[in-house]
Each structure stands twice: as C-alpha cells, then as structure tokens.
Image (cartoon, rainbow, N blue to C red; front, side):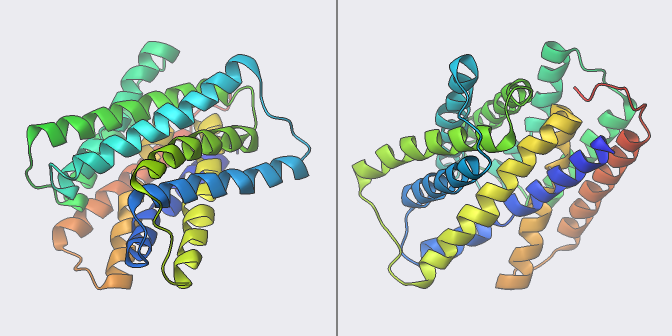
Length: 292
C-alpha cells in the first residue's frame, strides 16, 4: 500500500509539473521575464509552506539537514533551472528536454553506487521504454554542443538533488523540506532578478497565472514528489516522473491547438507503458523490499 501511494504521489507530481510550461507561456504574455517568474514562484511558495508549517506546529530543521535542504534549493533547483534555461538558447527545446530526461539513467547509476540498489529487469525495461518514449514525445532536433552539455549538466544536477533528497526525507517531513528548499531558491532568484530588474505582471490576469504557478506547478508537485520519493525510492521516482512531458504535450494541444503527431502519441504511449510496467512490478514486489 505504501508503494502504491508513492506511485500515485509521483504521478500527481509529474502531472502538476507538466503544467509549468503552460503557465509560463501565460506569464510571459503578461509581461514577466524568467527570473521574475522564478522569484515569485519560489518565494511565494515558501510563504505558503511557512504558513502550513506553522499550522502543523512543525519547526524548521537544523544542522546538517538544514544545510542539505538549503543546498537542494540554492544549488540544486537554481543550478538545474539556470542550465536548462540557458541551454535552450543554444539548442532546440526538444533536444534540451530529451537530454534533461537522461536523469533517470543518472539516478539509477547513483542509486546503485550510493544505496546499493538492486537493478531488476523490470526497471531496465521501464527505463528504456521511458527514454525512447521521451525522445519521440519531445521531437528533438539539433543544436550546438554547448547547449547539449548544459542540458546534460542540468540532468546530472537534478539527479544529485534526488539522491540527496532520498536521504534527507528520512529525517524531515515534506512540508519542512519544501519550506527550506523554496525559500533558498527564492532568495537566489531574487538576487539575480535585482540585477536585471523586476518585471511584474502588466495585467491583472497575470497574478492569477502566478497563483497557478505557485500552487499547481510548485507547491503540489514538489511536496508530492518528496513524499513519494520516501515511499518508492529515487530510481522509481525518476522514471515515473517521465509522465511530465506527456501532460505538457496534451495540455499544449488542448489549450493552444498544438498538433499531436503520430510520433508524439507513440512516445506518450511508450511512457505510459513504462509507468504501468513499473507500477505492476512495484506492487507485486515483496512488502519488506527496500525501495531504495
């Protein structure tokens, strides 16, 4: 039951994260720039989580755990976001997205090295399906080598974020961890924003978009991911997260009339098959098996 709840949480996280690109288009149309969006995203999310933290009467973590969480926000999220957003200036968005989704491979390798995770045939099959499905869904094209290297670096940073998070979540709740991570990332993006100047929404509907980014594309998916990570382990969480581009593509088609190609639909089907394969394998695994 714990594994099933973890799978549901990670799937919810991926679906919610998949809305970020959609909200981003509305945010840019409202006059915001990327660093203002990221500052508002994380600082307001930190405020929401701080209120929830107080309501639950939980305290902030201390010592080594606090330092690790600050690093996850200020280095992990910021580094991954910066490299990803910079990479799309040098390579196609499809290629960057595909290379970013190499992170399940990196997580699997790190999990074997750090946690001595057992690699099963089901996990390998699901990983291969997810990677091929992602390649078809994002429709990668060419780009400069520097862009590809930045995207791979972003994937590596996010992989380390997941591995560190796996250890940290054994000592804190998702609310405690999210509060610190959001606040740390918000502080860094706020400092970056000051250099280029803030570009807040020029129209009232822009603030509705900000609310969507904060609640639907940040608070819900990050909390759900961290809670699910504790239940299913890093490799399973990373592979289940490949649902994200499927959600983004479907939303883009329904909201903006973007074309759904046969190749993209086939890729989405492969990702869903990978998720079903992994879910079946996890549910049928012995109850005392370690998800890590």
